[in-house]
Length: 486
View (cartoon, rainbow, N blue to C red):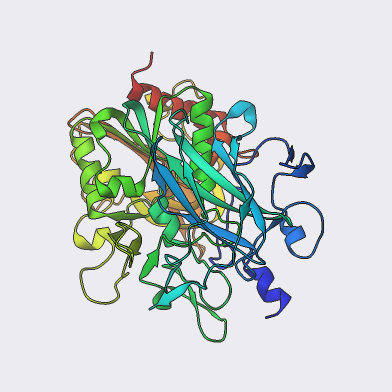
């Protein structure tokens, strides 16, 4: 395998041909100083430098899926204080490693705060991943470290940073949740993250719901991809999911301004661990494309009982999926989406007469090859109040990645008032002019349902180079109304 082939697979995003218009970079959660003191007292960079991974020297280097210098996953994506979380980690060559735990937040602009560092741990080379019908699983890996979550830890989004003695680094995201009431419940889209996960991105073994490889190392498309993927495996590349930064952008901004947040992930929603009556609003901060029937049922019931819904991305609720147990019987560790293949019903929600628009008010229209401006409509609406945005104003670069719009021939949800707040032309991959739209409606229960209709909304809240004060103010107008702030 040549160096050019290895280089192609370093990030996890490259094989998916993902164009990230927001400059997410390898570590989108990291915002502060570029150096810190490690457990030996030496000053080192606290990011993994991709250039060093390609043969440089000095400082931490990003582990990859070809050599698997250090990679890992956790037994459960979300745990409560007082519970434990199990880390399954492979280290090649075998050597000691440590785990730094960071919590995502504003933290004076740093973007994250280190909470603890593990003792030095002994690393082993775990067995190769098991594969069956393109499903890749590492459920047979030995336990490497068990972390008991202290009762005093704050709920939130966390990242475990794994570092070997010889300086290779990888990451594992997880969530600490509880059941206390809060104004807003933030739902991290771990089901969609796993759908895109191509681990191991090695040119031979890995498969996602989008891609797989053939025997000659050629990257295959959706028709030949996996129909079932496992949560019992690391994330490809640096160990962070594609688009994870969109959720972290919202978290940093919302915690900076003191919003009362609770945290959970999409599998909590699926498993019935969410009681929407505890919250004024449910916030879906990032790309949230894959939904099970129980997820949708719970969210629709929440809306109908007065809990508001906030969708800050596009292409939400597109594919219908099922979750099943791992080979060892652990619930919700296998994700299946047939995508029109095999027996059963079609996998698109809109093809089973339950179009996304019936919940969101708009629905997925297509990809946006290059960022375009968002064009403000109905500027007199309270969402745009005090933003400075006028009718027809353009907000540069805010229609990007993927876009939603209103489909006139598709039924709308029952509502007491509904309005489109942006109508933005862009060109698709064939050069045809399309339109993105942003929507808000009030359900008969009084709940508000907002859908941004673009990938670029969350990055505009707190990502360097993409912050827009109009979007910050509009989001505050929305959340303040949901939270009933003065």
